Length: 392
Image 1 (cartoon, one colour):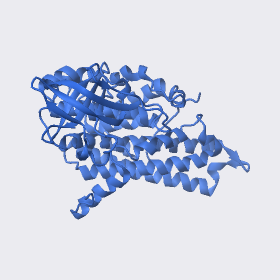
Image 2 (cartoon, rainbow, N blue to C red; image 1 turned 90 degrees about the vertical axis):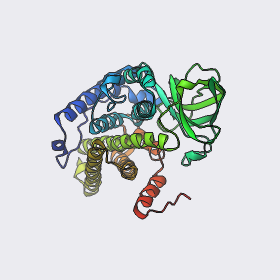
Image 3 (spheres, rainbow, N blue to C red; image 1 turned 180 degrees about the horizontal axis):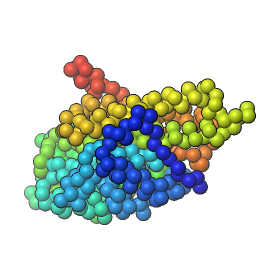
């Protein structure tokens, strides 16, 4: 078992842009990750098992809904602190960050933003602590990039709603206590419903055989005439703007998180290049290795500036969907490139569990397509540039 000696790269002294609170948050999460996650993550990934015992710990470090108000048991932090937490978690593993992202951005955020005060009081404190875990049901077997085509639906039965349909590729589904599900009513309008485990007709079969996000639990949501109480409807939103607002929050966290994976690959490659001797000197002394490391650091530095500026805009409530899309797409793309170059520097050792490189690379192959694919985000940016939608 390798000791986690990770140190983040900061070539442009960007720490000077962070507040003392930001640094304290980062140090606390990094310390917890090094103690609780780093020693076990490779084993859980190899076994394709999610370490459920860490959930309360994630709650204790404020990883669930960190930017939501303190009055609901949340952290009350700013958006940069939220980004830093996601970065530190994904520096360890994308699947662990996914668990926290889903809980905070896709379950707690819509309950806070679109829910009733009763729903906020009932669910948010327990979700913040990890006592309850949630998942987000939007993607369907036949509708991913086009969520408006969903077929999951509910009917008004007088004293309750009757929900039918299915969702897939749902992080946290196998162990989630509640699901925020987006479905169409009889008029074809999309609404959010809170579905609780134990409701008859609601099941969450687990997805097996993944080569990516192996330390994350993924499953389906199946609704077979599920009776959902009327008080479980999110009352303050209708239409696609509801789930899209949640995805903006999640994509923002991914922009920070993917950069964490890139930084971990770079740090490992840099250290390995100094330790590994070939032709009587460290491979870090050869021009092509230095080229790889220099290009990695350059892309990381550019992405750090991008995420920091996006965080400032988020704090000012000025970050647009297109700006968030650009950061998500860019940072996942550079993280994939850096993981692949880092794998080459590690040589054969790069494919083993002794180093994190191949695990990051496999994880990022999921991150590049979830919460909006690479191509969809390009089209979002293209539409922002031209004012013309290429989706239809």
